[in-house]
Length: 451
Image (spheres, rainbow, N blue to C red):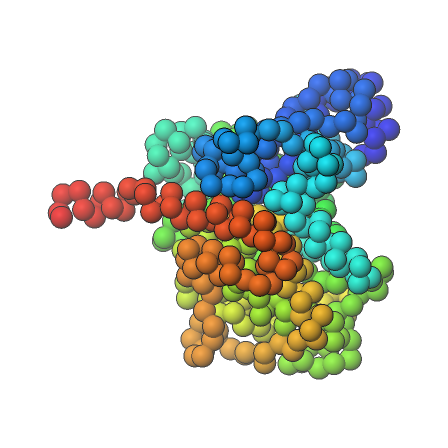
């Protein structure tokens, strides 16, 4: 929707509320609901929000130790500037439009360096300086429950009623039983200018996958978090719930967010070519980008797996990768190469559904650019079962390990800047510390009576 079309919708009364939103460090949508008539008087003016939103934890508690914003500095404001290219009406909300915003310093008007959308935009700018652009697509998996969010919270998220009662990977009968939800997701997303390819049952009870059509990488990151918002809000409207946890239950498959990426120059795809790499007809650009992404993936792991829960997904024979290896069309590899010709792309299978897409895509571009700049060569492809192949580098096994690697990464500091790296290293360690303080159900069941 263009600004003029939004003005017409506001004038006709079909839109009376505009959500100004932005992603926080977790990739959650935060922001304000603004009266549409008031906003249209100065659309470019945007709004202001407290800068503590880039330093809070999941419970919205201000966390000490950040240089960006703190009690000593008084927790001031940042300016939310609407990105006019992102205006859309959200069909699942009444008379409501949405605009994605960039966070700017209200004095210098520069992008807030630690804002996830800023981090991705800066890596996109580096790509553009080389005459390249990235196209991307996110596959997202989630579990559906017939238990409402409110009921789940009251019950401490125990004894949830899954929407399916047997594994339904590609199963059409079981999938039909959740069409009241998944069908609504598809229709609402399509009506809200987020084009959908498909939904399908997945390898867990009540688990599903929703695929959005590919787009330029910034638009895809925006679509990614709006899709999650749609799924949660529509499920909530129907008295159900959905979770994008990477590992919601130790007895069920984890939920992934496979990321597909390719480079282009205008309408020209840069990945296909005449080189033969393990049977893949590719270009030098493809080789170098894949090499860089793979080389730096361990150091940038926290950008792909940002929670303590993320690392419980990486188990053998679980459909989640455990090896930092690549292979053509091999679902046991961390990097799976799929497609051919203009459709040739790299599928990174490492991120879980809890990923912040802005950070993950920014990390992919930063790593791939380093491979391009150094003309790096990827390791040999590994065929067969990567779960049992010896000699492979294992993905980091904890957020603590990933945070340490991120903080000491020279690539991360060169690409994102030390201020940003220190900010996010503190953010990741805050999550680790919170998890280590918690007393869990597992501990109570194991030790309450018998220790």
